[in-house]
Image (cartoon, rainbow, N blue to C red; front, side, top):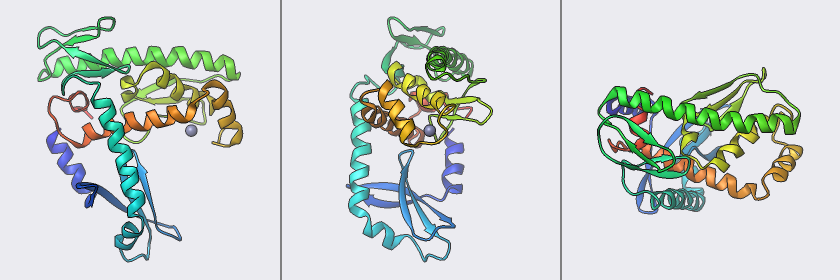
Length: 255
Ligand SMILES: [Zn+2]
C-alpha cells in the first residue's frame, strides 16, 4: 500500500499550496479549454489550464478566497464524521463506527456493531471485504428494485467496485455500478445514490426534470448532497494518509 501510494503520488504530479495553515495538494491538468478554472473534485483541488497557459500561479492567487472557503468546508466535513469515531481502527459501516474488539477469528456483528479481525492478515481482509460487499449489494438491490418500480424502468445488472472518482454510474445498456465505499454511508444516503443512478435510466441528463424527481423523493436533497460530499472527503483523507490501521487503507490493499 505504502509503495503504491508513492508511485501514484509521483505519477499524478501533486504540488502543494498553503491554505488555512496547512499544505493542500493540487494537480494541474492541461485541456482544450478557453479559460483556466479550478475544481474541487473528490475533495482534491484540480487546476485546469488551457494548453498555452503559462502556469497555475495567477489562477490560484485570484481564487484564493474560494479555495480557502472550499477547503474549510471539506475539513469541517471530515472532522464532523471523525468525532463520531472512537479510534483509527473502528470501521465505518452503514454510517456507524463499529467497535474493534481485537484480533482473533474474523467475526462481525451488524446488530451490536462490533468487529473482530487481524488487520495484518490478508485472508481476514479479503473475507471482510467480501462480507461488506455482499451487505452493500443487498442494500443497493433493495433500493434499486424499489426505484425500478417507481420510475417504471428496468436496470440490467448491478456491479460493486472500488472506485476513486465517484459514488456510482449508469451505462447506456442499463448496468449500474456503485462504489464499494458506499458501505461507509448511512442507509438513507445509499438509497439516495441508488435513486440517482436508477433515475438516469429515465432521465439521461442532470436537467430540471431530473432534479424535480429527486426533490420529490428526497425533500432535503441538497442536504443529502452535502452529506455525500462530507463522507467523500472523509474517505479521501484516509486514501491520502497512510494511517496503517485505518479502515480504508486496510481494505484498499488490493486496490
Ligand atoms: Zn448523475
